[in-house]
Length: 156
Image (cartoon, rainbow, N blue to C red):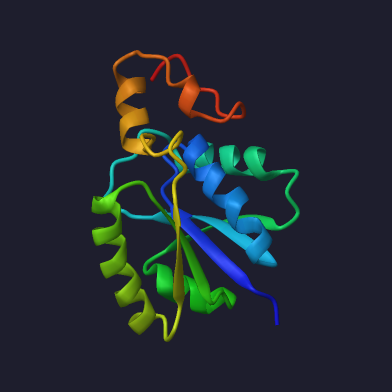
């Protein structure tokens, strides 16, 4: 049986921190599905289509990574595609407290979906999509935190 893991997120935008987590998890799984979770209540800076394109561009040369999206619960998506694992990156203690609770709920709702936590390397621990969006909105240069495949339109 294939070991499939899901790395869910909004990826608004995908950052070098996200990529670092996926690359470190690759040796552990047969397939990693990097999936955009669609939340109708959330306001995104970048369109769904743009975010999907960035994911495809970033992982196009990685045969063990598949790009997808889902609506509703992450645990249900995992069950739907046969994934037994979720991957989450932890930058700090606040991330751990939040993610621990979510992982326990996913275990129950997803009938045994396990969460693998990877602690961010120090040179990535300060990067979050939220902070990157604020840099972009403020007219700053976010390129140090973004993969080369991500080009921010000038009209943002």
